[in-house]
Image (cartoon, rainbow, N blue to C red; front, side, top):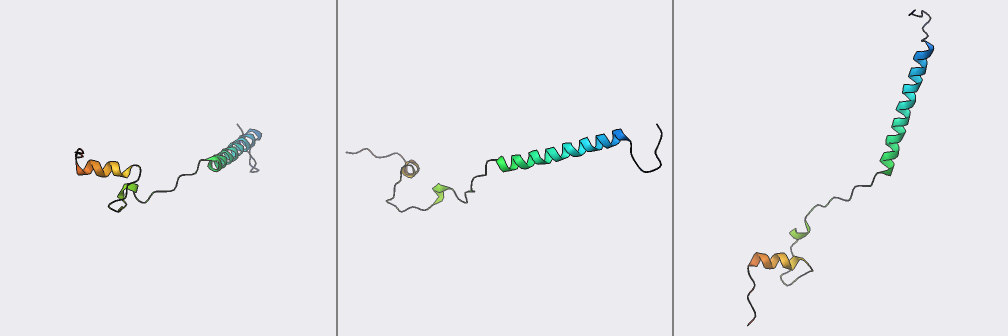
Length: 78
């Protein structure tokens, strides 16, 4: 193959470069669209709900289950 001395590349080299440039552009657009369509991450929790200090008599729907199991078996009513 003959090398050109005028600095120009061959027709096929230019076609290949254009194809590669177009593929990179399409890939960048696809990645940008995926980033826009992505489901946002939920807010971070800074503490566990069970770590909050609750008043002695306070019972919500689930917390009393954990406190009673920590105390021990429940006495039967007489």
